[in-house]
Structure formats: C-alpha cells, structure tokens
Image (cartoon, rainbow, N blue to C red):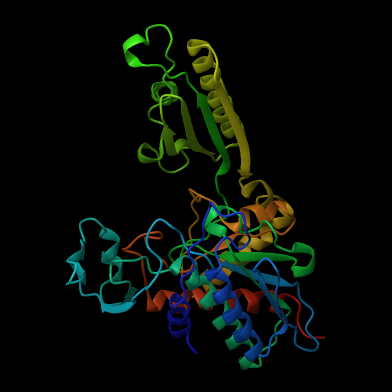
Length: 410
C-alpha cells in the first residue's frame, strides 16, 4: 500500500479529541483507529506490537542481523483538532492548475487563491483535500501513514537497517499526547515526531507554554440599588483583559514573538472565568508573562476589593534547550542531511505551538519534528500534495539509511 492510499484509509476514522474529557484517550473513537493500526502493524510482521490501556500503540522493526546502529524512533498522533468538524470526511483529489478551487458546489465552498497564495507552489500537482465541510486530517494521519509506509518499504527492501521503534499517541491536540508515553520501554536512543508542514521544514524549537485561569467572584444586587454594593464580575473580567499588553496577542504577533491568548470567557454578574494560554520562546520571557498575569490579577483584586484568584500551570518547554546541546547536534544534522540527500534545501523556523516531541524531549527522548506535507492544519482548507506525502515518507527512509550506514554490518 502506498502512502497516499494508507492516508486515505486513516481519514475514514473520526478521531477528534476532547479537552473536557477526563479519560485517556479522551474520546473512544481514537481507540478504533488505534486498533486498526495495531492490526495493520501485526499484519506487516512487526515485533512487539501492543496497544496499551491508555490508547498508545507501539511496535518495533528489529535490526537486521549483523547491523549495529542507534535505535531511532518515529512518533505521530492519532487525534485531530476540534477546531473544525472531523466526522464524515470526504476526501477528494484536485489536479491544481491555478486560481481558486471549488471544494463543494452544493455548499458553494470556495478556496480562494488570494486567501491562500501558498497554492501557487502546487500548480500541476495532485492535491488531497476535503469537501470543505470538515478538516482533512493531515495533522497527523499523514504522519502515521508516512511512518508505517516507510517502515514497510524498509522491511521489504532487504537493505541493512538498525532497530526502528514506532509510537502512535492519542490526545496530542489537547496537550496530553505524552502523558502516558512509555519512554523507557520505547527504548529509542532518539526519535522524531512526524507532525510538521512542508517537506523542507525541520522543527526543533517551540514555545515555552503555560495555561492560566482567572476566577472572579462578584456580588450581585438589583441594579436599581447597586451603587457602592455591586461587584460585577463580567465587568471585572473586561477590566482584566485591559490590564494585559493589547498588542501581545496571537492576531498581532508572528515569528519569535510571544503572546497572551484569551481562549474562553464565561461571565455573569456573580461569577466569571477566563482561560488563557501564555506563550514565549525565551525562558525568561515566559516567566515575565506569568508575572504580568499575576500582577494584573492582583491589581484587579485591589481595585475591586478582592474576589480574584489566578492559577498558572506550566504546559511544556522549548525543546531547543535540550536539542541545541552539543551531544544532540547529530540528531538535527541527521535529518538535515537526509533532506539534502533527496534534493531538498531544508530550513528551520520556530514552531508557534507545540508537539509531543517538546514534552518527550524533556522526558529523556530527544525528539525534533519532521514534516508531513500537510498545509493549513485545523482548517476546512487543509490539504497535502501526493508528491509531498511521498517525499516526507522518503525523508524517514533516508534517516534510517543514514543511521544504519554510520554503524555498518559486522
């Protein structure tokens, strides 16, 4: 099965995760895909295939006899974002010749080239797209398909290779993908998540991240007699937003600029809750943002006579802290050289988000992020070219080849 066919087989499984759930995986639909992947890996003849009680799938392609090489791992996540509908996905192939793309004539869903000028890079290519009513699921079913297809081709090729570990996780989209990942049993010397974008992108730097929650308890009284008595929690919430830097928000930042992102608000006169995520590439920067958030909460409490509580929880750290160490440079260079072997001129830019790899890196498994070929993740206009799916699969194969050639057969 080629990577495109395998990808389409995974797209048929709805796997949206649910941040409000307290189970792992957060949705039972993810287990259906996990069982399918487990059965597929067994059918391919891989070793130590298992699906654990938390919905993680693991497998191993043992080293060929006589090959001594570091053990490399490849990891992708099974869930999709809840930013767009993820059920009843109808994929389609578009031979892109330029201009706008009509994804759905019945619903009149048009992907406009002016809104997505990146389309110019794909003229003449076969694009896999949804019908515009759902996301497609490249993030990260493309990664799963590329890993498994690469390992299948490596196994069938007869070429020397070292030990390869595979891991597929639930709930990455809600920040829980590494919660129960069994790093010691996985047994890789290093790994790569396959969860990125275009084939020339290698990612090994991400945000430092924290979640912040503000709780406000007000005092409700009839507005006709409210003078000097009412504490309107909804108004206090609005005041709090004004106390944070107005330009340090996602819609006004890019590159290495961090932000405060208000994710949700629920507010009445008596009670309000605000949920934020805080992001910064610099360690001192994230600490500054946490301090500013606490200071704003304290100021609000002073202005209104109390009733304000904030809780800040660290989510993940910038994996560059570990991956930039001299002892880990070879992991980055291995991927860069593998891309160049395939005629790709690679570049790296900081991830304005996070991956399982960020947390796994700090759990003792150095883990940069490889591309999948996916474009416009979490969107009804998500797509990937068939060519890029194949190319990202070949990057994985080339990494394995390079790892094995460093430690040739005895």
